[in-house]
Picture (cartoon, rainbow, N blue to C red):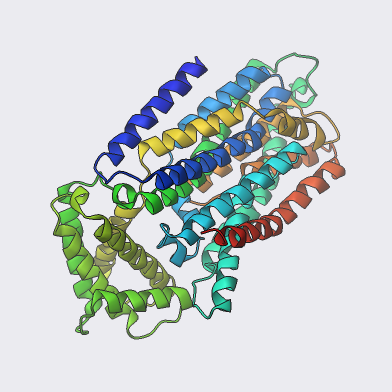
Length: 509
């Protein structure tokens, strides 16, 4: 059955890619090899992510005998698949925002591909190493460290030649860092509270707070809750972690086949005309009787502002000119598929410059004063801009879902043993498994709704530790020390690894 699903999925992906590329000039052999290799590595990252992170979701149901291991693993893989398919894409583009602006806008360059290969290979190597040692390290931490390494190395290399770069977006780093830092603390505290509540409510059912005997399953209602929470964690993991691979795949596609993937071709004529109207109205509001600038001049001003974060009186007029001209350029084509390759890359980059500038000005409270109707207008225009840029084709979701689901079913055992047996001094009880999974599911789902990347590994591990403390079971400090060490060293290790690989790959492109 699974072989049939895999073959059918691959056929579907093949047909979809062929349909996307049917309207673009044939790719050279070099481009085909580069595209295939990059996609294979990106999907390899999601495959490793599957057996590295999702193992945490099945640990509790396996160690409480709620489900047999083969059934639990296959069910988690299926739920991961579904989670990826319904993902919004907000997390994917939140991760992309960490990358240097100049590399995102020049993904078709050698430096752009050196960046993608460096961060993906660094993330895979670290994930494989920690998995081999049975350490539940975070794939989210790993990927973010790899992105930061590339950004820092790009900044250092450019600074040495006197070129100005945007460096690392520290505001976005802090936002992501807070999510990664506080989510385990939330998991620990809330899991302990939930476990104490469970202990109070079900105080007469003493078997809930004893380790399982042999292969004896938990009581029916607890078993149902454990299976439900395992389903929820697997689904939430797919919808959150799966998006990281989607974002990277979109960067690869935009860099190699811009004509097919730079803009969302699913937008209809009405949406394009609506964008034109919104851009004209927004430009009038922003302009405020300032002289209009050429696209070249506006592009230079906005790029410099994003790189240096130093606002000048020219920034808002430049944004107004860019906004007005974007609407005119896009509406001049009856269909987005009619835009030539040179123009489509330029339009995408100008849209990216505009949306990033809006975000920076809004955060700095540097936009012109607005009444409620003007705020609504600007919000609608920014949303319309994002609809052109922030989209994920269905076949990309299917490919990531397949890689993540298959990964879950392959290498789960090492991490499961650590979570189930080695975090506490005693075997996990039914009540502990239920409480930890319930909190992990809720935390990850909430983060996904807010578009914030969190670590499934750290949330669940800390939730299990919270229940161990609440139950006075004691913590196995050797294991806790190992997990904390991985948490501390993942960022610096992946920063150095991806930075080094980026420098190395630049020598060949």
